[in-house]
Length: 590
Ligand code: H79
Image 1 (spheres, rainbow, N blue to C red):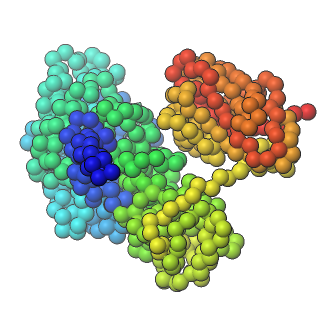
Image 2: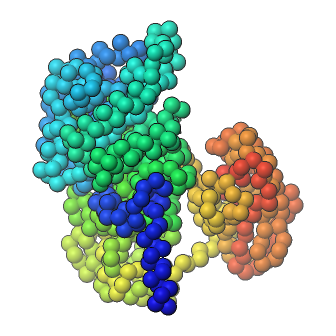
Image 3: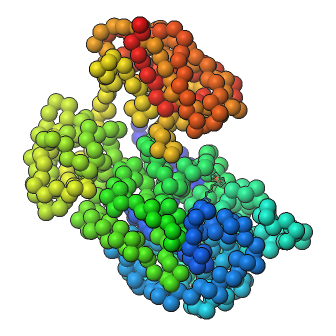
């Protein structure tokens, strides 16, 4: 036993951190030490600021994409620089606003896709210091101010660059105006490396947030080289996964471990169920529609939904990087400040339930709310108080005490056979009331099976959100507000629901699904585990991965009475994916 344990320790030490990418010779313990502040921070401020704040127009898409959206020539876009004079810029105010909102770090655009440098670069003339009447270096001021106020300071840096003469490919509308002949991408990469060295040596960033990595000129090999270069300059740097080519679209996570990056970067979306392991990820999101300031963008998220997202993301083990787009004068808009203040007021009381926490031990809660964990404390974030007490199903660890974070009122705890209930505090926050439960140890939760019950008309609705997904690829995702089971790229993965069937009966089975033409052709069966009977089907193209269509399966499925597990099992997958499944419907057969 003793020898065995030692052996395991040695093997454990030799493991190369997968999250950190296969190229880094770092033990898991070294990795955890390096990313500790980031893992615990939970909440940061993203800042998109550049000369696009001068036109400040999102009528054709994101404000910071102005040059692209209006298909501008480089020479024409350059005219915004002399008009950019953010005289109201005050680093102290910005950092104070972030800190008051409860944010622990700032990630700001040193350079966006438009190629304009918001820092003092020696290797470019297209900078805020050299090309604008402002002439100051706001990054120097912000870096110093973050040190003073105790926030981590980090850079967003775009690999894609629409301005540099050596960057390739050219935009389609530059043909004839700006020929690619003579451009040298290697020289562009050398320029980018020189700038990144300036950023590291002049401003000491704690993390680098790359973007614009998707064009074909940027390769995995170049990423490996850049990663090594940056880590040699500053070993403690934390670097996002957009340095490499592993990101799978806007869901933001890496496809395989061979790709670099310390953390995944979901953009404008929150993974519906988090992840089974403790990998690092950060959802970045805008306050309105666009990242860069846009005068005509009034689609602001409510403070309530922003606070819910802080809580939701923490409950799934991620960080929240919330964006602000300062104006051309260098100020946060009043709409921005209102929201930061509201979040800050909530954080002042409830931040112990956010900072340093890990994800919820519950798969599902029977009320509208979330949970987070820190040591032996379980935090219950109640968005909407149900009638009576709240119940925590399957919580096995003894609850020693419970209190409301706001005011500290002691609450009544009752242990029942399969759940623990907590009484309602007098003081309720209509946005989210947070309770702290002190437990006898770290929370242990026994998974509670939740049964799908028939509607009054006898139909069963089996939604993606309620599904039990088994396997390594398929998982619940949310796209454009549609929750479905996606990423289903292994025929070994299955999806199941447990039904409460009071009386045996025959049912017609419907699927609401989507499948792109190139992946169509998979076959599957929908079966009842206890009865070994099922109905089959074949996945036809619906036109695309987000075009959902109904499909009626041939035959009927007989459901025996009792608790029945219904499972969708792929039989063949000739074209790389099964389907996106939104829901299934069982209707009593006539
Ligand atoms: O800086 C903000 C945006 O300007 C920038 N990222 C945030 C943080 C951004 N750039 N592009 N987009 C957002 C959307 C672009 C999406 C696509 Fe793609 C690029 C679609 C196809 C190429 C991402 C990469 C999704 C698939 C591959």
